[in-house]
Image 1 (cartoon, rainbow, N blue to C red):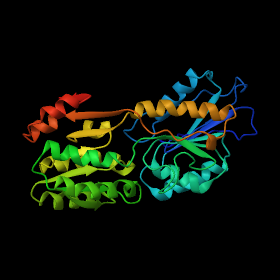
Image 2 (cartoon, rainbow, N blue to C red):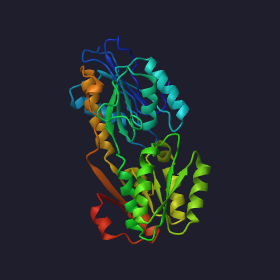
Image 3 (cartoon, rainbow, N blue to C red):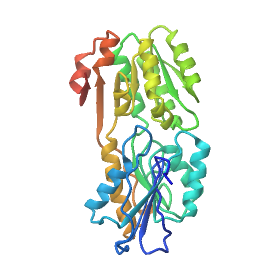
Length: 332
């Protein structure tokens, strides 16, 4: 029976001859080096509809670490933006007792952390993996990985809107309160906004109708702009959000490359491909005996700015040379 896309989990328990890697929202478990030859090879999965192929990237990294084809089994679960389904999958996967779980979004990591303090969890591409106030150096005895953003980047998103459209004096911040790690970004924005002459307007939404209503309300404000927070719900609805913003001629900034690819004026964020590839190194080390609590959470070291000139032209917006010069990639 076909599995829903987005989460991977191992098919066998730790008592089986092989290691298993399970993915929830992308989570994964892997079989041991002496796994029997009859074990099937890893399957390919995506961590979310339209997102990066986290499982393939992780499997590639494990192959580079010396794992042979057939030694690692991936089994996938994807909870989408449904917080209840994510929680149910987390409980289900923990009961399977895999060797490692790979989580690829913040709600998944939080649900897994609540579901177990024993099964090793490696996360990749998360904004707030361990919860507000927890230590990145020691997030918990069974969880570690690679974050996608740190809180100060939220100020950069505001600065980009202001640089692209200097007249902007109000910025709507759109997010789903059930799935977005908004609590680490909003305080930074609210602190920096007055220095930029900007008022922040939080825009919590939970479905497409609320998105349409929120963007329409923001569009009635003169000199407004829009920032979309990193969030699986925002990802799934990014084309709608940026299409509505373009109709309203709102300058838009997002944190992920595919936000710009889906119509945002600009995106600024970490290199997700690199993060998912790096996550394999921690999966490998745990499978070889290291403890997650001994592996420090790694913050991103490389950020990329993607400029969508098609959106700028549709808005008849003249992009400053200062932004063009810093762009790592331009969509034309």
